[in-house]
Image (cartoon, rainbow, N blue to C red; front, side, top):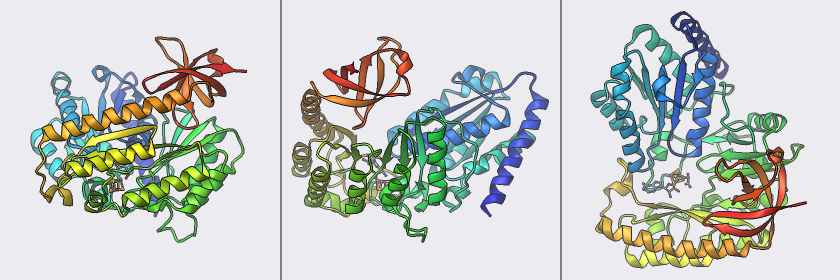
Length: 465
Ligand code: SAH
Ligand code: SF4
């Protein structure tokens, strides 16, 4: 079944290739723009791979593109507004060059209300399709090239298909994304992800390990395993291989490289996982463990399935096994029903845990989620004040953590040269950004850097021989 879907997709890619050869004297260009999370960045790499195979050359310049595709995010209202704003800005291009093809895909389009809005208010969007239907894009583009009739199709958004073998064009060969699962079953009450990305589906572990082997063989030095909740990897596969097993299998691949993963849900962060992390030398010393709120009452309303005490115990356990581990987290401020006392509990827990970095968001109401129907009596101004207070607290903590690195040595994957300063940059095992001076021949190598200073969230230092 899967193979025939892949073959069909590849067949449409070939047919488009033929059409492009007939239509264009010089190679046509395509622009892919990505909004949102790493999963979207990874999905866009498949879109780029398919476009290249069709015969498009990739560009960043909308003015020279024959096809523009926006891969959108729906997690917060702001992300949607931005995408619509950007799509709106394409109208003059389309007026000037009516043959330009504009496509929209991703999580926004998977929402029926948004698909309707595109149909009604954005007539110059020619193709629109939801997440989890990347393999259908070539067929849609082929139909459009033939008929010039617009296609808005979100039918496959929740389908179970996991098509292996789609062409992929990686943005970065040193640091690679490796999706291990799609969708989410958690239904946190504020979150649109389960509604747009559908139910959890894990890739076969053999495909995951084979891809990791290929990546290492082709020079990848930092591999991030992706999923909305990687800790529940493998639950529906029935082969007895779960997330800690995957970590161990990839860790066993020969070569000098680093393994990262995102995202871990605290409720599924098992002892086996922490043990595997501590025993696998290639697994980075960093855990992104979204907390969302420090108030057990709010966590319950969010349907997160853990209390503040359980979260704190988990952090203790992780630190006992891995004393140097760097912890980062996501926080939502102003969830419906949250009072200042609840918020203070969040401030208290971040002071106790001392995350090296926080991703903080003001609650954004998402259509069709349970939280959208909950009473929310706190004003936007008040929420913004809380938000600033949290940022301020975290800044102090981050600064203290950064300060504590002075004089210490960290292992860094050298990724490139900063254009302005000419300094080399990269990430330490704990995921912190580091800059240092050195020769550009070090790009792609792991080096040791002694830290002597920092600027905001970037550590600075010098090479150690
Ligand atoms: N699956 C991952 C990440 C999902 S989205 C996880 O559970 O950790 C990334 C972050 O966006 C979430 O952790 C949450 O902090 C934030 N987020 C999700 N929905 C939101 C909403 N409606 N308003 C504000 N922030 C939200
Ligand atoms: Fe959204 Fe919760 Fe799933 Fe993360 S775990 S994607 S926050 S529902």
